[in-house]
Amino acid sequence: SQIMSRGLPKQKPIEGVKQVIVVASGKGGVGKSTTAVNLALALAANDSSKAVGLLDVDVYGPSIPKMMNLKGNPELSQSNLMRPLLNYGIACMSMGFLVEETAPLVWRGLMVMSAIEKLLRQVDWGQLDYLVVDMPPGTGDVQLSVSQNIPISGAVIVSTPQDIALMDAHKGAEMFRKVHVPVLGLVQNMSVFQCPKCKHKTHIFGADGARRLARTLDLDILGDIPLHLNIREASDTGQPIVFSQPESDEGSFESQNLLTL
Ligand code: ADP
Image (cartoon, rainbow, N blue to C red):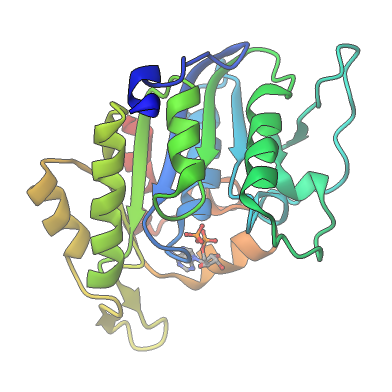
């Protein structure tokens, strides 16, 4: 009851940041970080007058450094704020810049929370039109704390079409609704694999699961992304697909759809 009477913690905007878009997923490994990275790049590519940042609060498994081909320690500004690292025109901040890549992140809850506080409040973003936030998977303390501490314009939820991923994506959507964060829609990832040799299409994780969930929750499908070797290679080499193959004739990436955000 003490917690109830205190109500929600007061939300405070991140200085200099106009719109925060969080990218979330129920499960790990469904392509949340891939979506976050390419969404940031697409937003910047779509309108070169927009300044875009990328914040990785997936503290247990930060993948932004590798995907954005960045490493190193952020410099401190005069007011002791961390300066984001820059690549492909995107200002990036990640727990991965602050700890050794191979250091095990077996942190106690409190340490995670103070890391989140640092990432949310002690970064000098300058002026940003969009800050894309790569959330940890699931609906735990970090997700709740981020949602309660900063005003969020909307959440993008990523899922594969597989039942087990969809169940967790559903929980994620419910969580955002409870904390009054608008859910912008779902991204269905890894829905189809087309054999490069024989062109046969296989729905490895099921066909339309996320589309069904979108109907159930009355949400839009923002994109439907195939399982494709180029996407995995692009991520692993730190040259995200939207950057490295912007004019890809594989129209089926439908990453264009994300631009309508
Ligand atoms: P999450 O953030 O949900 O844990 P990631 O974005 O890190 O997931 O993706 C997990 C792995 O799957 C990465 O190696 C990534 O390159 C790969 N991947 C993601 N989406 C696709 C896709 N559509 N096609 C091929 N590989 C993908």
